[in-house]
Length: 163
Image (cartoon, rainbow, N blue to C red):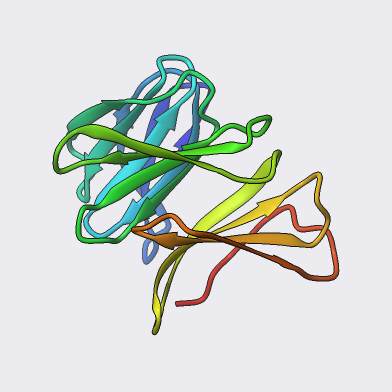
């Protein structure tokens, strides 16, 4: 769990319902994603993603990101790509952790409120919901970044994906 005011990540033992460890991270943490054996934490103040090992004992990498980054997703692809976006932006940005480069940006509808990776039988996608486009979901094919848009009833604000 993020302890935003203290700039720490707390690791909770779900069986005993106790905190087993606290690790100091970058200031103003605003999002985190657990992927594989790593925890990824986005810090707004210092514009980084910190990669923590599964035990919560150490920070194993610090990755610089765009100054307007407000959301984070980790795509479990062959190159383990980080993706982030700003709520007032119409762009998703990606970062390849293997070659340490920023990948091309993907133009999408503005005001992304939530996005999550989706791994299906036909490939890997990034699914994005938009605040200013009620019911609009964007499917971004990985790795070629082709964009498809679907409109559904409702106005999404939070998004979960079932594997």
